[in-house]
Length: 355
Image 1: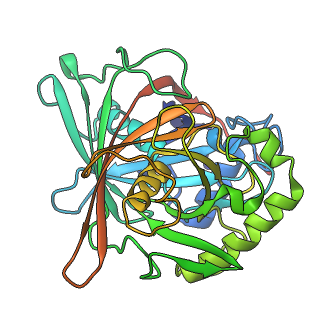
Image 2 (image 1 turned 30 degrees about the vertical axis):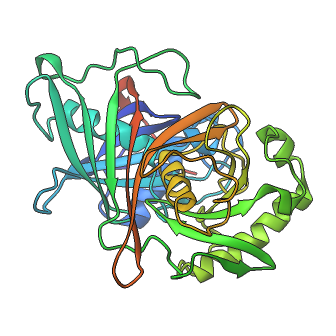
């Protein structure tokens, strides 16, 4: 097989996710062949992913494919692949804001960009969604510095600070055009500030909103109802039939309990996130700042467009959003957040010969 000699690969943590990073030229150009290869690299389908790089959880079964961009003003193109754990499914329906934190350092490691002075900014096109991000990180001696004193909840210890700024361009913040929709008998806000999400009140689903992920996952009735709403919401958001997709993400909102702005539990969609994705947090923060949006009455927000502290099962995620409204009533948003990343290994990965 073409990959019998192995493929150059770097395993990296980005934010609270972990994934395999590849230069696009090292992978098959045909999407069907690429998906087949990624399944074999990650060890899917298998609940343990025992025969591949995957970590038996959606947050550790991810792939980033990176290349130089031909778009003016953009340095790097980043394509995200969510590799299902126990199904032979590879999806590009969403992007990943956590792995995004590692894209700039990876591009520098592979020589796709060059460092500038002590800190380098890399402009990245999120190919899955069309959003554009700027990642700024320390580059002493022209190399990424993964060490530092920045801590993010959901990751042990500290690491080097990475500043992310993300803009949605001309994309509508509210895909349906409405601040509130009624979907499958529930009042929801459909929002996409980098990640399509559905904002829901936890108390409408008979939960407090501060339960641990495993407790929510054990509720078959809860999962079934949320999935029913998700499928209907996906169609309303223009995503088509999402029954086999991982978007939109479903966010249960409740009042903050630890001094933050809001408490969240994110269904992604069948598992519950142990923290919250960067772009999920950005979408939640933007939604809370739209008057009348679901959950806006539960939130404790600073004046103006400031930092929104999103509480999640393992801590909190501060996100700064700027929300504006055009003269025609269209809502738009940009966001900024702080993440960290780390190179775990760099070498050659050998895909299993067949699935």
